[in-house]
Image (cartoon, rainbow, N blue to C red; front, side, top):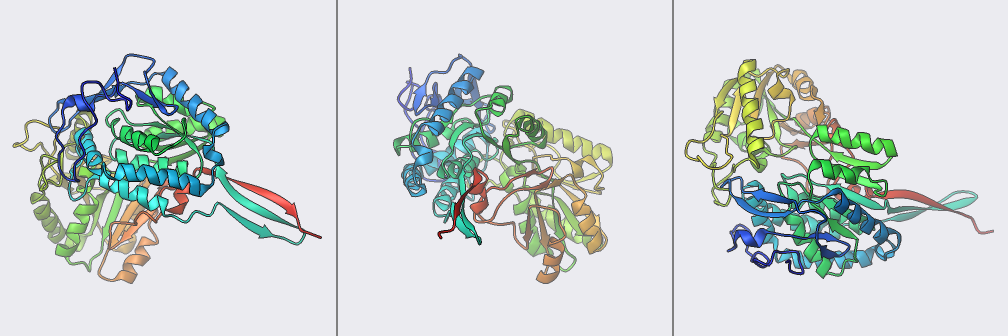
Length: 505
């Protein structure tokens, strides 16, 4: 039997903890046996369970109901009714903002719980800052954005009021590598503009959304405005196919994104895709090696243990400075602390699943077979026999045509690729089916900026990692389409409607 918040009777909610500290809890506290549909905690239609396993201990840490197609149907029906008949879309944006602000206030005091949940579920290092803390900050940013939803345009004979109106029911599918952040990145803009939402978290990280649902429910979000149903990919596809859903927001692999885009195209359904990446950072020949290497690491294998679509995984270096830059990079990688993601010293934690570790190790083997050389790492840490760990790995002697230079590995593995001159660097950087992120590091800022303008990527950091919450995030080419963050992220969940009126007299 469940409590009002869907927590199993064996325990209560996890205790609140300050960011960066593990709260006292037990496995029972992480067991949920209800879904959040229609503003209530309801029993699932089936009896399946998604078991959450810690990537650092390889032990179960909790579970949630495994939603069935019937559960998806019920959640979509709830969101559809809430949009068509409920008050949420009809409320003024400031009224919606006030409800969400109240939800943020409730969530803020549980930021430590969110940090802990993310690290427990997928192994993200708690430091330098937990993902839950980032998610709360992002939520706060969104609520402060000036959001003009209409403007008047006048002509000679008439004038028009151009409005951004909510697109309708938003089906949101979030990945496992940044669950709390991705929930906020998609759900808050959709709700603020007046959409209703069906949220499907990844099976690896289904626990975070329960805290969001609790906070927004307690803040007075109308029933059906948010529904949470965890399920595998096959059942999740029911959400994409349902004609009552007006838009899909998806972050994940390019392969899955292509399938989703195809399904949506059949219905001319709106869709936003934030997909894979194989991002290149161009290191110019005028850099100080000791100064740029920390930035390279922070933008690559240290980003979520390399499990980030935006990570710099191709390090383009001038051939004339290859040895110096590789030595500096390998020396820095050798000092990277790998281990318990709750340890404040850890910078690379375990990979999120055994399947993910197998994938990364498979690519290391492919790189060796293709003729690349492992300059650092390439195996499992010998002092970490338990947990899905791999060593931070640096490949050299890499040709950009190799699979390890073209395919997304999604782990702490980077490939150093030599180039000859600025034009060659641009050619190599753009020689990819992806175009999500990139970087240029150089002492001459004007030269670096000029090269950045030639890179085909949605975000390019010039002597820095990238933009902040106010800057749109999204990709070129097979890295997807649509944008998140900034004001642009809100308008992805709207349709443009024009009201035309005759001029007086």
